[in-house]
Amino acid sequence: MEHQENRRDFLRKMGAGSLVLPMLNKAVQKPEYTGKPLGIALVGLGYYALNKILPAVDESPFWKLTGIVTGTPSKIPDLQKKYGLKDKNILNYDNYDQLKDCPEIDAVYVCLPNGMHAEYSIRAAQAGKHVITEKPMANTPEECEAMIRAAEENRVKLAVGYRCHFEPFNLKLMEYGREKTFGEIDYIHSMFAWRAGNPEMWRLNKKLAGGGAMLDVGIYCINAARYIKGLEPVAVTAHYSPIRDKEMFKEVEDGISWQMDFPDGSYFTGFTSYSTNVEKLDVRAKNGWIEMSPAFSYGPIKGNTSKGPMNEKVVFHQTYQMNAMGPMFLEGGTVADHCSGYEGLRDMKIIAAIYESANDAGKKVRL
Image (cartoon, rainbow, N blue to C red):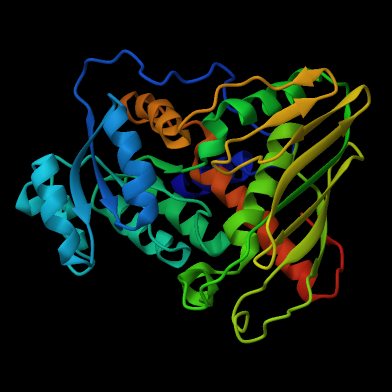
C-alpha cells in the first residue's frame, strides 16, 4: 500500500500541465544568517567544483566546506590546510561509503561527469547525506528515477544545480512569461553551442557524458523554454546535424536541431552543437519581444526587449544558487520543485524523446 501511494504521488508530481516555477523574489548576495552552517563535501575536484561551487560555498553563510572526495591525492594538502579538513572527512571513490561515519558532512555536491551522477548521488543518500548534483541530473530518465527513490527511501533531500533558476536575468524571463508582460508568447528560439577542441575530453565519451552537446548545453535551451512558458511540452521532433569530424564524434552526437510543441499551440525551436560558437535566446510574443545573448553562460548575460534593455544585476551565479538552496536544506519540508530531482527528471524525459526522434529521422514523439 505504501509503495502504491508513493507511486501515485510520483505520477502526480510528474503530471503534464503548468510548470512549478521559482519564487521570483531574488536571492541576495550576502543574506543574513548567523546559525550553524551546513557541512558540505565536494565530490570531484575538477574546474567546476574548485572555481565555481567552492567560491560560492565560501561566500554563503549557509554552507561550510567540511569534506572532499577526490581520486587525485595531490589536490588534498592545500584544501585540507585552508579549510582545516579532518582526515576522516577526506575520502576517495573506493571508501566513499564511509560518508556514513562523517557526521560533520551534512550534504554532498556531486561535480563529476554526467555518467557518475547517479551512482555517487545514490550512495550518498544511502549514507544519509543530502545531495546536490550538477545538471544534467543523470544520463537517462531511469537513472534519475533511481536517484529520486534513493533520496526518498533514505529521507534525505535531492537537488539539481540549476544555477540559471537563481540568476537575475533568467528570473526576469520567468517574470515576463508568468505575468505576460509582452502578451501571450507565440514562439521561442534558442541556440547554445561551443567548439569542442580537445578530442580526449570526457564530454565525448558516451559512458561518461551520456550524449553530446544536447546533454551539455542544449539542456539550458530546453529548460529556459519551459520556465518562460510555464508549461511542459507535449511533443518533440529532432534531427542530428551532419558530422564533419567522424573521429571526434564517434561516440556522441555533434549537434541537434529540434522543435518542442506546447499545449497552447505555441512552439520552440532549438539548436545545439560542439562545432560552432553561438549562445542566444529569442522570445516572440503578441505585444513585443525579448532577446538575450549571452543567455545562459557567464557571459556576462545581456538582454534587451521591445520595451528597452534588461538592466538586471550581473552576479556570480553559483553564489546566488547556494544562497537560495541553503534554507531549503536547513528547514523542514522538501526542496523547491524547480530545482528538485523531479525537475531534473522532466528535462531528461524531454531529452530522451529528442534522441528518440532524431534516431528515427525526425518522427514526432509525444510526451
